[in-house]
Length: 294
Image 1 (cartoon, one colour):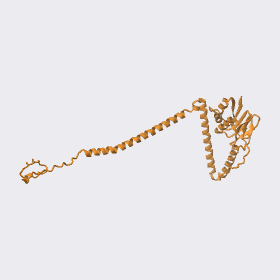
Image 2 (tube, one colour):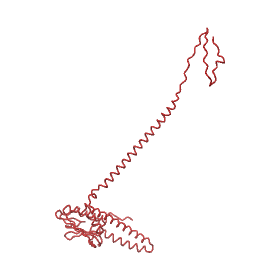
Image 3 (cartoon, one colour):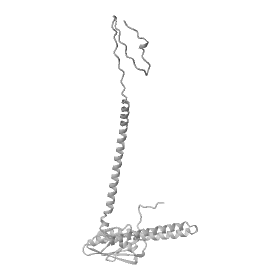
Image 4 (cartoon, one colour):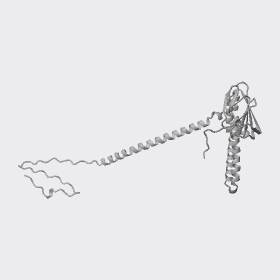
């Protein structure tokens, strides 16, 4: 027989002690089967914390890897930049020409550069003064006429259409064995042009003279040199107008034309003059293709 639970058997209020369960009363009736207790799911208090920690670590790992990759890339770029700077400095400091030059040669090269700078400054000043005069109102027409005349004279000298006079050099090329080649004379002309030569002519041992202009060519010929279509024989003398000291420095730089001709057994004599005359004229050339742009 089952006994109904009384009020004393009711579960106590929360917070009080839990009474012991009453002893089971058995009787003739069929014994009561008790259903096995179902265990409540156990919650691990550290699970959420661990999961959160794992999530944080998982999220932090990519950021850490990304930061490391950027650092490596920056380090590589810095290393490449340093390597480039070192190579550049090494190449500039290892110039074989300047490194083997004597102190006197370096002084001449520096003097040449300073003379070029001064000449360019004077050209700039002259052009600025011409511009000021052309924009000066009433005197503009007269200034424009004078400027046009001056430019025509300059172009006539550069084109070899007019004779010229001024300070300059005479350079004599003589051979003691091997003949002077056209390449040596062309190198001399190029170095003189780079040093500010304004008018040049070349004369041969037979008295022939040829004006040197932009279109003049040099070719080796039988027993001489063909200069702009005129055959000359040695020894050769170049007469040039320009700053004598600057041009002389350019000719005597290490590895220049004087050193080259002397190394081949030739002889180069350079003389400075307060006044030289360039009298040979170049024939005008009719243009077939080039036209002025208006």
